[in-house]
Amino acid sequence: MSQEILRIQKISGHAGSVPGEDTQRQYTVCKLIDTTTCIGCKACEVACMEWNDLPFGETVFGNTYQTMPETRWNYWNLILFNEHEREDGTLMWLMRKNQCMHCAEPGCLAACPADGAIVQYTNGIVDFQQANCIGCGYCITGCPFDIPKMNPKTNRVFKCTLCTDRVSEGLEPACIKSCPTGCLHFG
Image 1: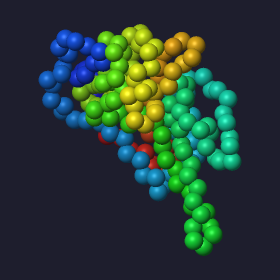
Image 2: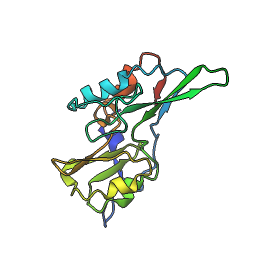
Image 3: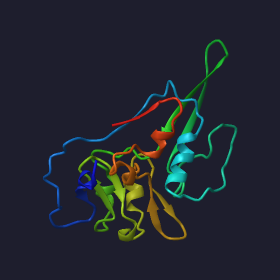
């Protein structure tokens, strides 16, 4: 893959035409998760933080193996643990990966008034351009999954980029590359 893969298809708050808006997608990337094989090891969480050079912050454990209650501006990838008691009294765990879904029709992009703060590439990846963010938070409200988060010190919003820098070079996102059980798939 090359930088050609990252041609912009949609731009937030943009009144004029968008380069590539009429481009037919040669392919769209997606991320698939097989929750039946996830062991909750959190390798994907650590790989995301390391690759994106995110600061390790304080974690919160509240009667669960979950690292914290929700994603944060500096914690884009979170494994949620759901514990259920079966009829026979044994426990069943379901791990669910909580991060940006890179929606086909992104609510965050539609809600954002800042020209070029959020872009959707022709391969489907939705990316935030920090230099164009005005810190209004409309993208947070526009996301039905409550994924984008505001850094209170910089008033900039952050979320998973699906490792556009890796994908543009033909590599998998860091979270997928690090998964020891192969429950994460990308293509």
